[in-house]
Image (cartoon, rainbow, N blue to C red; front, top):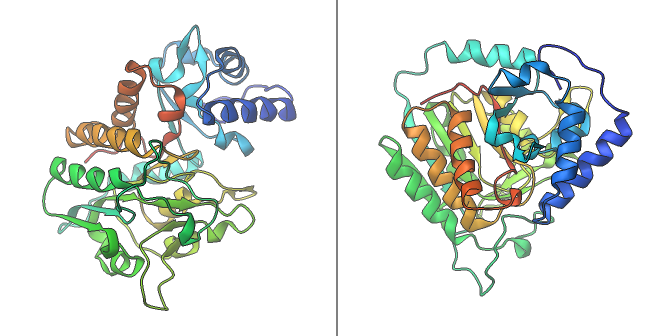
Length: 327
């Protein structure tokens, strides 16, 4: 974790164990203010600048990239309630992204492409999550709110927009679009994380009868794309999760940044469909008002906190990349 200075941290094994326990508690829709305060004290307590700064850009080290920093607790408040929080893969990447933002985007840019593949009518369950344990079609739960999500965003952002829904939302159709011209890519899909083979982690598109289209947009596919997007939103589960190696975290987020995205909204665990749709709609309402994207995401998350939603519903989301990007 970098904050402009280096500070001594507690024993790595103890710190990572506490971080894992806290993340597990939040994922099960629980709260643990004492542990959240302990982690705040260990990770951010020594940072004297925290009292005078309102925006944190974090570079999490090792498995701390799975920790929802926005849900750490200080004096009875979540960190998100007092600070704007974003993440970047490294200070070098942040410098490159800020330089990229100052350059001109393509003149003939297109505002928005939204994709929602799993729009079937849901079954009788009330709690629908955007999660799978593997990329098998039988494991893919319908996500009816994802359709309303991408359509609502289209009414918020400038025209013309491109929307791929249901059977039309195939990997082949998506890749056939002029992706380098879009300012915003919003992908409301199922996500699959392969810890053993991170290049196989993927976003799951609609089935396609073509044998050449497996429906999986994998990390290795994304790295080959050429984007100029100011924002990519991965409204799917576990898109910020991946193994840590010498070159950093291998996941979908970093692949999109390598492909040319200025910033990526990603997630640290599975998502509940209805609350996710609501938060994404609020997020884009703020983005459309030209708020910096990290600020817009925080505003949308604060709305859920105001409604007493536990961290499970909002702390999974984080903005990675350049937090100051605007549309």
